[in-house]
Amino acid sequence: MASTLMTPGVYIEEKNAFPSSVVAVETAVPVFIGYTEKAERFGKSLLNKPTRITSFAEFVENFGGGFHAKFTIAAADPAKPGETFMINGAPYVVTINPKNTVYLFNSIRLFYANGGSNCYIVSVGTYGDKPDGIEIAPADFIGSDTKPDIFELLKKEFEPTLVVIPDAIALGADAYGSIYTKVLGHCRDTQSRFGIFDLAQQSFTDTTDAVVKTFRDKIGVNALNYGAAYYPWLKTAIVQASEISFENLDATVDLEKLLPETAAQKIVQTFKGVAAPDDNAKKNYHQSLKAASPTYNSILEEVRSRLNELPPSGAIAGLYTMVDNNRGVWKSPANVSINMVNAPAVNISNDEQKDLNVDVMAGKSINVIRPFPGIGVLVWGGRTLDGNSQDWRYINVRRTLIMIEQSIKLAARAYVFEPNDGTTWVTVKSMINNFLNNLWKQGALAGAAPETAYDVQIGLGTTMTPQDILDGKMLITVKVAIVRPAEFIVITFQQQMQQS
View 1 (cartoon, rainbow, N blue to C red):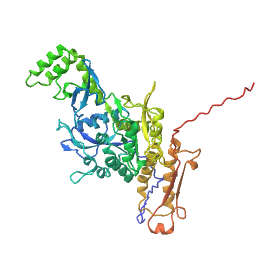
View 2: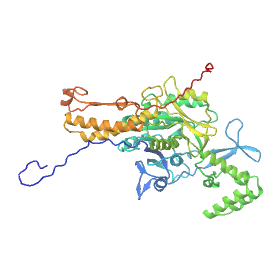
View 3: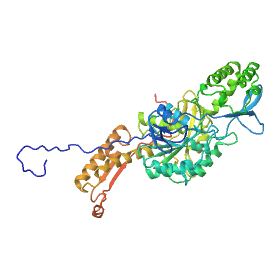
């Protein structure tokens, strides 16, 4: 209504009948940080720029494809244990070339194969112009005098809620103390993100205990409730046989000497005589070798199996998205199967998982991925790295509270500089109560009745003193009982006497 009524007439005044509402923020929007083939959109560079994508096709359009890794083949050394395969009755070893190991592209494929949706990509370097390989450096992630700090840039983006860095684990244990601790600190500072971490790939000379011990020693003790670690690596089916050819073999690999089949040797001799083979000639050469040489096929399959062994973080990020969309962030992202995975790289038993799931010394729990006959490969753990904390032991509890905090924070922003009096307090309390009541109805909060599931307090003499009001503070206390997973189910059986 007009503030001053001076002109005769009819005036309309509209009043709000309903309080403001709290809208739940997105909970599974990962940001993937790593190396890409290119980083360009509409002619403008996307290097070191957080970029939102909605599909794998959009990723390929803006960031290109995977790195064309090269492999060498050599006779196996009996003094060096390793995974071998047979060529003409003799054991050989396939080894990837140095600087040829990048995981982001295939991790994105694994992410979308397991329910992934919207995500952000931060390219810290490109390999499209580096056919000989790319050097993975911690400074590309954490910054230096000449390179930007990616995590400072990410602080300006509100939407991402998960941080995934699959390429960092190519550094092995060197990623823990520098990059992983940086991620945990970033998630703690923003209070809106959660890190998903990989452990180093277990070699033939390592034991599971050694890999886990190194991780626990180097990850530190700060902000552990803002991250979770998964182990072991996965033998996937992401890389298809059609993607592998002789071009994945290093120039030092002489197929004419390596292949025992006479027909295959003649095909190789003929191809060597071509001065500048075009794409069609290369395709025909590859197809001819496949038809003439079973050994050639087995070599390509060995190369493919190496490329298909991937860190689990990409798949786990997809599962987080799938579980959040289907059940809610309050459902633990565990006891769910992983798509496009044949088996874990290491088979962990019940007894071996005890020390990984419960770390008596520091609580640094490792979530294990295990195969179950007739069921598939399941994520068999749902703990944060702060596994001994009663508050933050479980991933779903940490992430649910992040969602509640950020949702209420955004809704309360509308009341900054509003009168700090009873009218505003009632409105704010009603707004938060309605939001929490809806979460309770959906099953996010535990309690037989709303009053046992949550409590909101605000007001003079309750959460504020007269001095607080003079200082411009509106203090709100919110208590919630978040549902926790049934990690251990114990069924007791006892015989009883016959009754009749």
